[in-house]
Every structure is written in C-alpha cells, then in structure tokens.
Image (cartoon, rainbow, N blue to C red; front, side, top):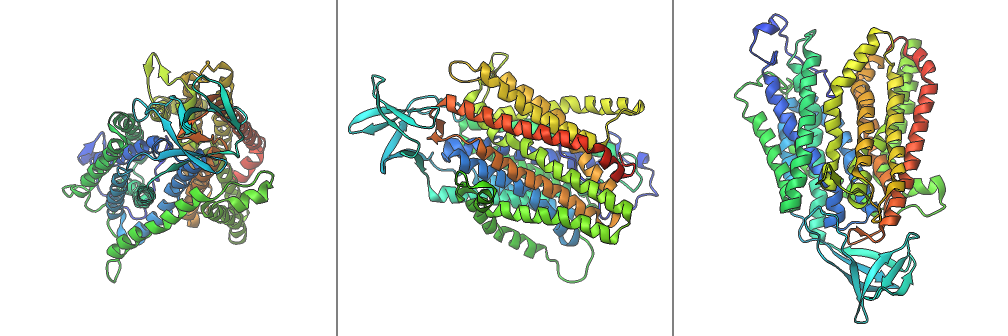
Length: 601
C-alpha cells in the first residue's frame, strides 16, 4: 500500500546554521528519524493487520450479510481518510503534532482493544414463509478456515440441508438427497441473532479508531518534515525511508494478525494490534528528549485547549456510531428505481461526501477563476480534473478490503507453492509487490526521463486507471478455470494484486506532488485536503461497489459457490471495463490537460 506522507511542515526549526552532516545521524539522516520510523511502522502494523481481518470478522463472527459488512467497511475506510483533515487542523492551531500523535495512538489502542470483545458468534436462522427455523452447521476447523460444511434446518422433525441455486432460489434436501421443497429468494430470508451490546461495542470501537487515526495520520509526517531545514536535500530521501516503515508495518501486520486470529481466536488478532499501538505510543512518549523542539504546540495566549479537545474527540464517537448504524441499516435501492432511487437510498455519509466533494470540485475552479490569473485558473482546473479521476482509482483499488477478500475466502483455492493460507493474508500481496517493485519503477522513470520519454503526470494517472481495471478484467477471466468446487487458482488473485500494485506506484507517489505543483500557493493546504477528500470519496464508493458484488449468505456461508463465483466475475468485469474506459478518456484528454498545466510534468 503506497501512502505518500506530506513533506511540508507549517513550522520547521531554523537549523540552517548547522552543518547537517556534522550532527549525529541515522543512515545519514537526523537520528530522530529512526524513532519516527518505528512509531509509524507500528501504527501501520495495526491499521493493516486489523484491515485484513475486518470484513471476515463481520461476516464470519457477527454473521452480517455482505451488503451490511461491505457498507460498514467502506464507511470506516472513508472516514479514516476524512478525519485527518480535522486532526491536522487541530494540531496546527492548538495541540502541536507531537501531542496529536500520542493522543491518536492511545485512542486507537483503546479502539482496537474494544474489538477483542465480540462475544459469542452470532446464531444463524432462516425465515421460511414467515416461520423462523434455527440453522445448524458444523464449526470450521479454525477461525479463518472457509466453512464448507452443509447447513441444515429441522422442519417437522426432519433435518433438511440448505442448498442454494444459481438463480438465488433455495432447495431443501432430505437426508437421501431428494428435493423436498424449492423456495424463491423472497420465501427464504437468512438472518442472525447477535448481541446488541457487542454490536454496539464494535461500532464504538471503529469510531475510536477513526478518531485516533485523524489525530495520528497527518501529524507524524509533519514531525518528519520538521527534522529538515528548508533546502535540506536529504528531505526526499528521508521520507523515502519513512515510507518504507509503512510497508514493513503493513506486511508484518497482515502476517501476524491473521495468524493469531486463526489459531487463537479473533480477540488475539485485535489484542496484538492494540499492544503494538501502545508500543508506538510509548516510543513517542518516552523519547528521552530526543523529539524536543519538534511538533511542539503553537505559541498563543490563553488557556491550553488540549483537555477540551481530548474530551470532545471522545464524545464525538457517538456521531461515528450513528454514521455506522446508518451505513449498515440503509436499505438498498429498489430495482428499477434508477439513479434518483440510488441517491435517495444512499446513506447520510454518502450524501454528505457527495455534496462536499461537488462543492469543492465546482467551487474551487470558480474561485480560482475570480482571484487568480489565467495560468493559475487553468492549472487549478487541471488539478481538480485529476482529483476526480483519483476517486475512480481508489473506488476499484480498495476492493482489497472487502470483495477481493471475500472472493479469496469463497472462490479461490487458497494455496500457493503447495502451502495453504487464509483469505486475510492475501491482502499482503499488495505491500510485498510495492516493496519489491518500487525501486524498479523508480529506476524505470529515471531511465525514461534521461531519454525524454517519462510519462507526464496525467499519463501516469491514466496508466494507473487502466492497470487497476485490467487487474479486475483478468480476474473475471479466471471463472472459466474454476474447479468442481467453483474455486479458481489463487495465482489469478496474485496477478490481480500485482497489476493493482504497479498501478498504485503510478498514481499514489505523484498525487500529493501534483497538488503542490498545480495549486495556487495560498491554498495548497486546502487542496491537500481536497486530495484526501477524493480518497475518502473513493473509499466510500469502494464499499458501494463491493455491495454490488454482495452474495446472500446463511450463517456467513454462501449456499451456492457457483452463484457466488458468477456474481464476482460479473461485478469484476463491469468495474474493470468502466475503469479502463476512464483511463482511456484521461489519456485522450491528456494533450488538453498538458496545455492547462503549463509545463508541469
């Protein structure tokens, strides 16, 4: 997962009179970078470790239907990229980056710890023509093992096996295999009894993680930027080292957390995440004075508002609980209701993001046209257009946290080189490819630049869109190779993640740089916020797209793997074709954008 930290700092210490090479260093950089590297690594360990488990936790333990689980994952990840805008502002004006980072780490650790208390697994049931029947199923071998045991219900003293059909209807089979009854999708409705207390605790936990992330995410990068004096040529290399911590943490988290959850229970995976966040907090708090002078609170008159901010941030968890409840419980749009029906059925979070994003992409160019000259207006317009295409990229790329993980669990062999794995660990394919190929891509761009062939920013964006779309088109082809259990080789998913990761390397590292180059100087900060807003919108749409790939389940298990496979293949192909089309459109308008960008490449 490529995450490009912001290299700008609002208040950097003036050390221009010091020879950077004469101070004590770590790998040629300020020694404080090592501490910040480890803090970020542990935080990303927690974030990606929990992300690997989340959709499976929701569908296998709480037994939420795919529509609910995918919507909740999309809403959660959307807010993860939205709250840093507020957290960065509060740090700049009141807290200082260092206090914000420590507070964020503590709040996230509490949120992750609360996830440990999921209670007993929800109990599945089925309602047939208004009559409710308990569903029985043999337990899976381990927490994350795909459960293929038959599900049964007792009707009039007879145990009947539930068997889904490709058209969505359900057969009830007698012990001898004969069909006793065929039920339409409307006649057979699956559900689950789950503890209201544990469900509420789950949503409050996600809310705390979102709040803590808002304080942590933007401000750790600000402290890194403060280590370097203006003009210090080590800055970019320093952020490259810091960025490596992100991917190392991601890989470790997506190995350790699924392993612990699978062998000891869900609680173990989440407890591990909470512990490493506390390690990150301790590394920041007990710094021995090494971070003194970096990320300190701004000087201003009046009382310190830190305590008030801390209290209000915790109280605001109620707001996030309400948002998550709305995301989960909003009914789907009725068939044939069209675009307006979809908008009406969209949860409040989706409506709010749509309004804010439209206001930004329409209002900012109008504002720049009024206050700036022609060149500034055209450059801002180009930036806004690229921001819009960025939404499309993330909407498809972030299927990794939802539909791709569920597809891996239900319709892949989960074996590589003869070794078995679980669906949660498949998410680590992305950071592994990034770590291995980031140097290769960097060398490729340099090699092309020396020959005057390096693609421009807008062309790299177009390539990213086409590659991420191609990844899904390729995966949709895998359906023709499925075995008798309707599972395809895991190598198809590896290929998809490879294409997605190369696509990410084409767009993510240049996104923030593009903003700083094209935005009017006095609104760069605001445009950074719009960039993260576009990712937030993309994350929300990723959840909505995953809902389109939702499959009806009973007790967290699909009743017909063939139907699941066909649903995923159709959705992946549609999303892939649309995104490739968006990339082609961007490539076609690239010459026009080049004129608007006035030499920025």
